[in-house]
Length: 359
Image 1: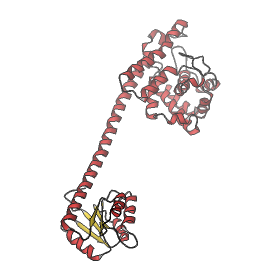
Image 2 (image 1 turned 90 degrees about the vertical axis):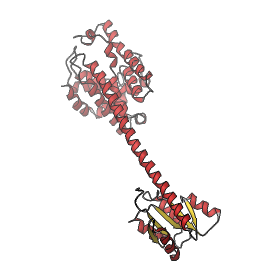
Image 3 (image 1 turned 90 degrees about the horizontal axis):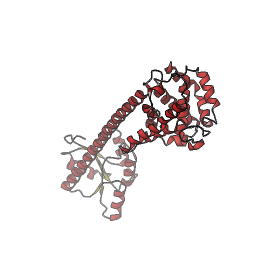
Image 4 (image 1 turned 180 degrees about the vertical axis):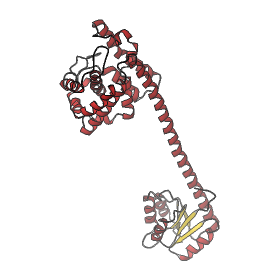
């Protein structure tokens, strides 16, 4: 709203003398549009949007109360300030108008100085409200931009940490990226099939999926000799490898303790701590079973095992996708949640497409 531009005012009154008098009072300071009825007001506002409306209360066909209801119900016009013009002088009528959204009452016959001052004050207030609204909208845009920048930076740092872990050998590159994509496919299908969808709907998926990249962060503390051993681990080495789960959770918890806490870190800790648990309770580190395993862990178990099967590792060659799919399906009810295997069955083609990144 340009304060230097002449503001448009629509004056509505069924009395021609009042229209003429009001126009003469205001024409030096404002661009005035006199109209004789509420119907003409709404016809005019299809072409002219005023800065303020002076609205007579007592009019035939549609009175001022009905007119202001219609004005405030229209998103295009609801912010336009309305001043009632009335010859009535009772408190209940004034209260009714104010409750409907009128900002002020001006009694007839008009006092030119009083009318001009009230219009000036309300236009100033409307301009300040518009400026404040614009400021808040611009501030929210700035906050959103800064939040996105912080998230992108955070995600880049954590992604780099995860890549450093997996690139300690030359054979598991891409595991972090692929498991995130597998998870996204599974979650989308869960929502479509309405399997565990109520729980999934509580997650902020913009944080849930990226948090999965930390599921193996604890491997940073496992020796290269174990990570890169070209053969099956012996019992002692396997016990050492299993420690990556506890180490990963502890590392994520330390990050959380130094921040205000976030769902990103909550999901990351659950992924790290439970993706090696099995539905039948034979997994590690806590031998959880069934629904005691968080949904994040049950999902990651599928993504993680599938990718391990189709990937080349120091101790094995990659399996064909068809073989990996069959192993996952056969693990329903033992290694994996059978309900999630139903979801997996519907997206095996998408898993196969993602798996090509491993080639």
